Length: 446
Image 1 (cartoon, rainbow, N blue to C red):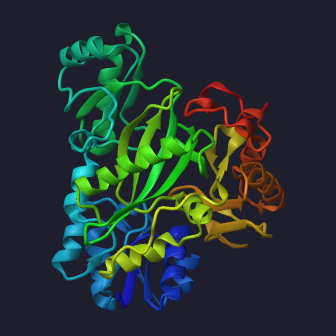
Image 2: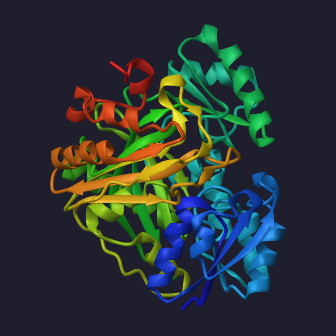
Image 3: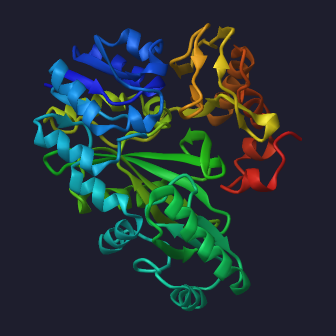
């Protein structure tokens, strides 16, 4: 079994990993920037090492500093969490070169699934449904025009190295193509240093449904059902739930089988997520694979009562999978509580928390690194807490979420709690009648 884990991350996910390690008797090492000196992950780890100034590129993204911290403290494994270096194949490869276990997939798997165009071709070869589109990059406007005519408008132009909606444009007619193509390439170059784009059919009324998967070093693979992540703003997830309100046993089985084929196609090890778009006719299409634990892993945990981080640690220690596919026995909902002002276009709201009260009670979980007197730094993602409720039915889980949001007090900064409270009373959300464009076409304040 792994003896000591360095967590190459910060905030709530670092604290989440520390808790799992402690329960398994594994020592932990926190790394932190100077602005995170007072963060709880630093306080609760067995050891802590400062790795640089506040900017991520000078601390959490600096591979040399993270590796040095692991070697100095004698860590035999590194857990990257999500974000930062979690899907960096170079980092994973260097870990192996210096004799440190990277808790995640192999560098080859990360590389194969990190390039969206290559991933799509891999999935097509494995018999996983993919969205009609280019078989590789679209390098000229003329190529884009010809392909768009063949598959039909509307289409999407997406950055090969993209994420978070960067380098993405929706094209509804031939008149819009030249401008959208140019803007997508320019934005991709600025955001990722790679202007390559591909083109695919735009799926109408799409639901964002992802399948949690695990693989081990012995070729075993399992899926742990779906999560619905369709409530989004600018392609950033805000509310996630498991199971999905649109799911049927037949669709779950088909999507699960496709996800297993995807895992085995790349000899995948550890936790991953196969993300699909599901159209209004319940046709599903591969979108991308996230080769890491996800923010919303909590709703899977509570819907089937498992600990996914502990399973990551076991698999990284060379043990076979201990999880099996099982039907959800709870409905779980997660609201991402961000330090943002929802009444001011979700503007970031860093600053000191002057008063704090977490909700509690049966079926309520809070994953957070904040405390009264803690200052939210302006340098990182604005997520300050994940509020999860779970119950035997979706209706009960929503009712618990309403109650929990009413109890949740964070003062000194603006948060997205008012947005979530409104959504829990939204008739369309309650009925499950929404898609990924819902917040673009509806006013949540009404």
